[in-house]
Amino acid sequence: MTGLQASLLELIRRTSAEIPDDVQRTILVALEREKAGTIAASAMELIQRNIELARKKSQPICQDTGSVLFYVDCPVGFDQIAFAETAREAVRQATRKGYLRQNSVDALTGKNYGTNIGPGAPTFHFHAHPGADVHVRLMLKGGGCENVGAQYSLPDEALGADRDLAGCRKAILDAVLQAQGKGCGPGVLGVCIGGDRATGYEFSKQQLLRTLDDRNPVPELDALEQDILNTANDLGIGPMGFGGKTTLLGVKIGTANRVPASYFVSISYMCWAYRRLGVTLDAQGHLQDWLY
Image 1 (cartoon, one colour):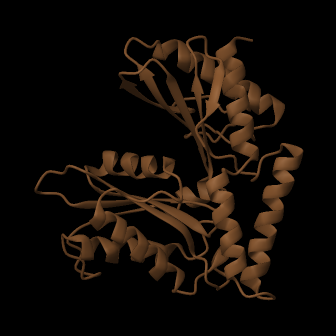
Image 2 (cartoon, one colour; image 1 turned 90 degrees about the horizontal axis):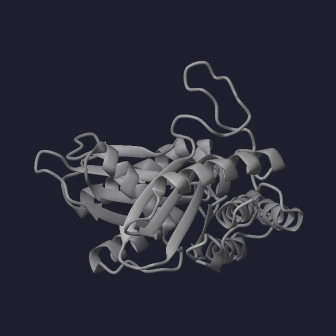
């Protein structure tokens, strides 16, 4: 096994079994916020126990280990083809070892080949940067939360949402209302304002690579993130839709240029099993540092 393959296998194992520290801290705060003896508190306690057990046993946090999404920041001239081939083999091995469940099926026939390998699986996003290091971030995104993602084209007459941040707010909160507990809440929203239909969703998922405790450098977006988080948690939807004070754990919003004819608000929903980790690799593919 090459150094790169071993590093990616360990990245997959830990991402599947261990919640990032920033998410763990946020969940513990949410548990304290819920009133003792309520269904919401019980749901959060079960979530916390699940997290502890998965970490202790090095087993998947959820039976749906989700879509496997690699985000790779690499130097100019980096061999992306070789990386992708090695990553696919690491996914194949991780599935064999039980770090990933056999989730990926043929789109037309539904046949499961038991490898999590196929067209578009796993998915790779490569981005060149001027440095010499390779940063690999991995996201495992479950199908339940993916099902409640949403995209709005503004203006939206039914919502009374115009092409401004107030209209974006209405669209995002409507997505929260429509999701209720179906996305395995409490959830995290990744949002993109602008772009086309495809890039809007792609940018919205990239927002989920941010940590929950960061703050948006754009003041208007920072204010919108905090407002939506507080407003959503006042809706009473709560964990799994059982009621309570924790509907969302975080909101992350970015923008992408758009053409004047279009104004999309794209929302990716992440479940409480927020599986996102990352590593820095050296030139030989050996693991140097953890990014989260």
